[in-house]
Image 1 (cartoon, protein in one colour):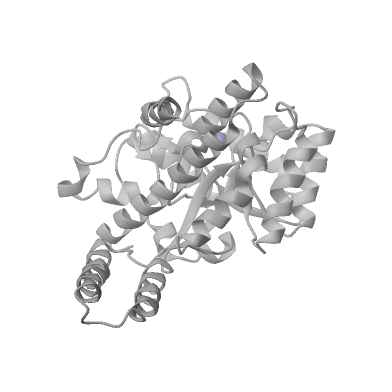
Image 2 (spheres, rainbow, N blue to C red; image 1 turned 90 degrees about the vertical axis):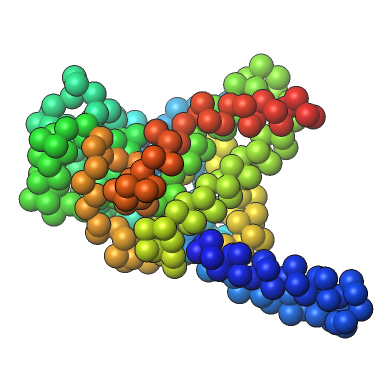
Length: 327
Ligand SMILES: [Zn+2]
């Protein structure tokens, strides 16, 4: 949301609150306050994307239970999403069954490479990386829900000009577009912490982790939406990065309810990717992270304010520990 707009409507609310307390306005003005608040918050539109489906058992949930839970919530919220498939994790009969359920449910299946390599590593060449994308393509291009969108593992798009441009050229030549995220987050970290805790103590208080997770995502939604206005996309359609993991199998419904309560409008990825921001081509090095972050990095006065990597478990560690200690 545009920070100027937030400041504007918050100022109006503070002014009205003062008038109410001094008896100038009838308390019915609350209805008006609520309307102002909702119209301001409702401007954040968010689509969901899920990376890295896999068929391993996670605690009490096997892949099928985890998958069914995520799909059931998406259906309940009438949301169409995109599943970014990393080949080696689903290169099996059960992997095929998992992808078919997404295919049948009307979601998109897109490419997330075969081996999940870190392109910015010196050990990974552009040629090997491109061949790895093709390997994953051959696994998933037969599904009717397949779309030619590629999401870089770890959102890392190249540490040198040569490598970045070679991969970009190869994607262009094969008709692929970049499967950007606009809202980056660390759901994987909260997932890992929740599973670690539950594996040691199955009766641990999961509510603590759930609440911390919901607030983390909401915090990132607000941060990236504010950053979007800085780069000239104050009313953009967002794509949020989530994973096909245990925490989302358990709490995706709570997350979506929480976001809606905060005024977020949930939209399909198909709709979100029509936003012109996703066809921008940032030229920073190393290339990668959220598309909004990359565009902000190109603006000298904002570049120094951005942390790198943009998101990581290390930023979440103290936040979560503080919450646990306060309990
Ligand atoms: Zn991934």
